[in-house]
Image (tube, rainbow, N blue to C red; front, side, top):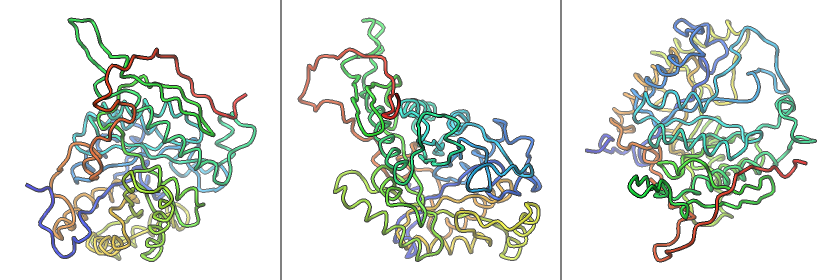
Length: 422
C-alpha cells in the first residue's frame, strides 16, 4: 500500500516533503523561557531523544541539527555579550549519532562548517552516522567568513572572503564524496576461514588535488549504507553567485530562505541557472523553502504568543527567514501556494520547540494528510529513499564488471593538507 493518500488535484506537484530545524529551545530567542521549554535539559541526551521522537511520530523526512564555531549572537560582527538568551550547543554530529539508535525512519542531518573542518574528518564522521542509523544520515554544509571564528584556528594568514568560502565548500563536498567511495561496497570480506577481513584491491586512493585540498585517501571507514549520504546547503536572496553554485552543483538538497512567493520563484530560477553550465548528469537538487513558525489554533493566538516572546526577549524578532504566525490550516494553505514556485518541500523552524514542534506533527501533518499532500506512513528506510533520490549511487572507483584482476595498491597514512599551510 502506498505511504501517501490518494492524489487529488492539489497534489499535481507530487508528495510534499517536510523537515524541522532543531536548535536549543527553538528559533525565537525567548523560547527558552516558554512554559515546557525545560532549559535545564537543553544539553542532555534525553532532551534530544524526546525531540527527535516527536519529529518521527509526525512522519517527517528528517531533522537538522544546528552547529557553529562561535556562541550564538544577535550581532553580525561578533559575540553580543548577552546573558539573557541561550548560548552554547552540543556537537551536531555527535548528537545525531547519539539519537540515531532511538529512531527507525527519521533522517538525521547535522550541520558542519566546512571553512574550518577537514573533509577527511567529516567524511568518516558522517559515514559513521550512516552506519549507526542504517542509512539515514545527511550533512548540512555551511561556511564562515567571520573573523572571530577564524581566530579559533589561525591556519590562514588572511580569512577567505567573497566567493572563496563557497568554492572551498564545493571542493570539501567533492573530497567527502570521493572518500565515501574509496571503499567499494563489498570491500569487507570477513572470512574467518581464510583469515581475510578486507579485500585491499577494493580500497582506493582518491588522489584529489584542488585549489584548497590535497587528499590521498582512502577513508578509514567502510562505504556508508547509502553509498553517499545526503548533502544539503542553504542560500538566501542577496547571496553571491558562488552560494547558488554550491547548492546547484554540490548539494542533493538546497534550503531557500526566500520571503514570499515571488522571491521563492526567483530563488528557484537562480539555482536552476547556476546548474545549467554543469550539463546533464547527476540529479538536480531538491529545493526546500524555509519558514519560522508560530502555530496555534488561530491567527490571533499565534500572534499573541509571538508578541509575548518578543517581550521576553526584549524586542521584536524577525529572523533571517520568513516568519509565519497562524493556524495549521493557514500554514497548509501557504505551503500549497508556495510549492508552486518549484519547491519540493519545506524546512520549518519551530519558534519554540516545546509548543511548535508538536503543533507541526499533531496539527499541520494531519491537515496536510487530509489534503492528500503528505504521507500516512514511512515508505522507505533510508533518507535517500524518503527523498526519492538514487537509493545507492554507483561507486566511482569500482571497476566495470568486465574489468577484473586489478592489483591492489598499498595503503598509506592519510593527512589532509590545506594549500595555504606552510
